[in-house]
Image (cartoon, rainbow over all chains, first blue to last red):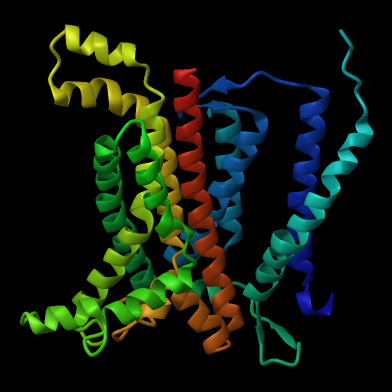
Length: 90
Length: 290
């Protein structure tokens, strides 16, 4: 595994992503849901909303990094607010 | 009627695919993420640098210029290949020997490997021995793709159009074939013009496959590497250095693994975003039609 050059932060990052995927898979099996149409005008399920959240968060973080000098943790705060908005309205 | 048996052991049949995807995509991607926040001087020694490479890449003109060239390239080839493909499909014979003949003929460029296409055009365009380059020179056109940026762009674009318009044409043709004759008969009764038939019957019926064509062509052109690399090597200067060419130069040419990893992750995110947009549009189109 040496060649993969693991670090603790990246390991934690992937563990979080993996646990999110597992949690949402279990949720989908235990509590199946019907897709709904939100503000984007497209049908989304919980899984879709998770994908939109993760992808959007990546862009929020990049934009924060490129445009500001403020600590990156602030971007995490924005991402959490964004996630809440996505799960509520998308 | 026999009831379907539910056997969860069937999930094990998916395992080979999972293993394959893990080794071909997931593990390399994880490695790239790990590289993107570290620096290395080789010898498998890595040093933590945090988000430095991402910051450097976001502020680098080199990446933004390559992205600009990439978008311009994809935009131009889409603007040519999609209308041209539709036009060819509309004019292809509908049935009989010539229909099959056209289909086979159109498929030929699609069967040629990328590097061979690159080599064909690299030689074809040479002013000393290539048919195209030599002819252009003979009739007095100042064409030289090795030292003129515009000529290099034209060559790369014409090459892509030559290679891939068939795909659009074949997809559009398949879309056209699925339209029942009754639609055309009704249009005839209404004395619809050729344009109206195209606008209100053929185009809507082709929308689904055209969406697939646009998606495929956009993604393919956005990730294009081999053909321009073989023809121009990214030159003259950096004129045809598209994202993937730049990325490979950075990663394996300069051995800047960290910045290249950050670069490729951003490249990957853009592709993921565009794929998702196209996928969403496509599934919504299907739903509306279905």
